[in-house]
Length: 216
Ligand SMILES: [Zn+2]
Ligand SMILES: [Zn+2]
Image (cartoon, rainbow, N blue to C red; front, side):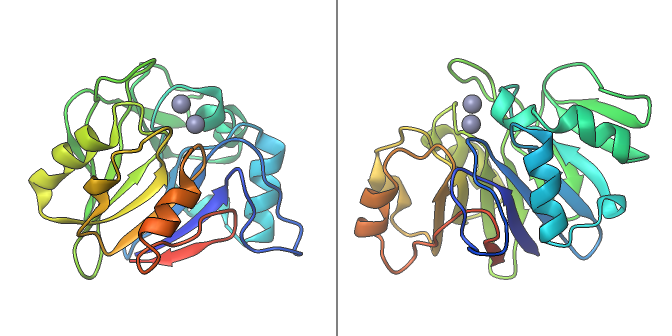
């Protein structure tokens, strides 16, 4: 499975025109399909970054919105006019377009082969879902902002099997012990303690940012 960060607070692949902005979006390409996880804040930046990274919108069959904050659902409206026949997995019970079929998330569910939602987890200030992805060597978690808390997200995700990687926004998470035993941590977007995590786990730390590709 291939993950490409297409929207983030930082740019990883420099000098090719990619833009950073507060928000998050990550493309997931599995053997079966292409899924967009979150849509960043501003559609013009999302679409421009995707174009530079050669993402074909017509390949996207599913969109997952982790939670209803502007920096994760901002590009959804514009995308819905450009994508036909996609399925949208979100907590809010509303689809932006007739072309987009809504799956309203409450319980944990399967999104695609090897890709599952944690289901709606209680979070402050908003509830959130994360994705659990089956990579070559085990299970990975892809999170938007981690509002329910990294502990809760990892705990819920463990039900699928041992979690070996964590990717996405971790907000003000600082219970770093929870990361011990992982093979990969890519702390991006809103993560407050990126530097501390990098320092504590240099061998497993993967820098995030727009243009970063992670093969799992
Ligand atoms: Zn948020
Ligand atoms: Zn966020």
